[in-house]
Length: 507
Image 1 (cartoon, rainbow, N blue to C red):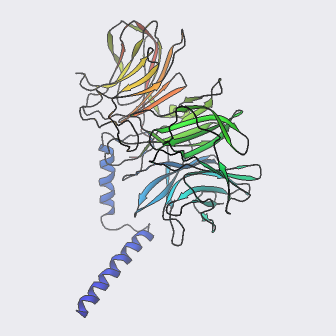
Image 2: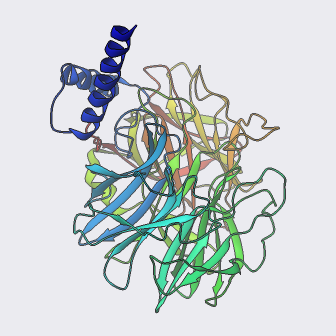
Image 3: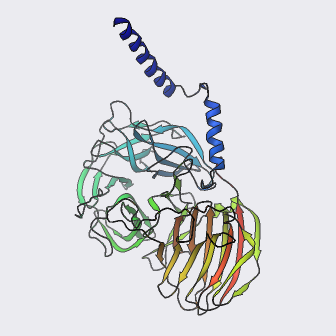
């Protein structure tokens, strides 16, 4: 018995010592590591649904995959995302100089022994008055929100406040400096009871000391927002002479408010969604770069997982619309760096009830730029990811009677997932066949669409003020064709250009 205990103890110590060494030693290649890495990379390259130019998790599954900590510093875009390892949530750090090609860092922001939290959840990054970059995050298990700060130029070395959590009670925070005062929004936690759970405002004179609770951050709720919709992943910023709050409801997805901020409360004047039933846009995060652009990413929630799972939307540039009650949403010019093999169709007309397959444009990794004069047509659009026999196709529909921009998932795949009405589980959660976004054309207004395809991702920008995202899973190899259609009246395609998009992801 004594010998058995000695052997068991030795095995136990060897096992955990080996695991600890493996975690600590990131430079030593272990037997089988190279072969395993090759297997992963080959599997990723051969995965038919893995995007190749959208920012995608390096390997494994990230659920959630919230973008966090976005900040532009010294010519570099920095971004973190949530991923899971060893039973807790970490923030992975990566950076870019062009918004599409990213460098992964070997360090991450994580729970350390003695921390009040046992994981790092959503938050943001900002520049403090002492020059430090500060990250505010929800400390999982701490009941509140914590901060870490760095003076390191590469943002590799971080120190956590000894006063953590500095805001309590806390949920997803957004923290910023205004004058000599630090403000923090603590997002309203998701609730299932239907009771409102509004976000709380905290203030303080130091970013690493306990903050004072002021009260409700928002003065009142807006029509069209249900009581059960929380304000999580908040992002709050000035745009022109207005203030914008971007956030999510865990049930519905991304949305934004525009209104007035007096230093004590936010008074919203308008409300718009950025995700609709059956949609997939979640956890938005923004930054301002050296060009003054407000750039947004969001997590595209997978409906199916291939080799890995976790994809960001393409970056979007936000500007305040002329009405000062809504936002313009456009792709960044940097996407043009990925273009190659340009093609162009001559102007052509489509008769009522006709669907025309394009001769020059095809593929499942594409950008398209299309201008359509709708004339008197009430329902028209394009179909992408089309197989020759028509068994798979994804219509993008402009419906002028319903005033919607629609992605129709019904014929999109022979093995499509169930598209549920709500992003996260909520009962009842019925199946949704189409994703419908509000879209109205003024009399005489033409339709300008910019479409982006990336294997299983479809993003549609319409007339610079609407954007709709969906995950699509074609199964047929020839589901690469593009069609233009008109249902009830003729339309004219005045301009149609397309480009292949070169992969930005290494694998």
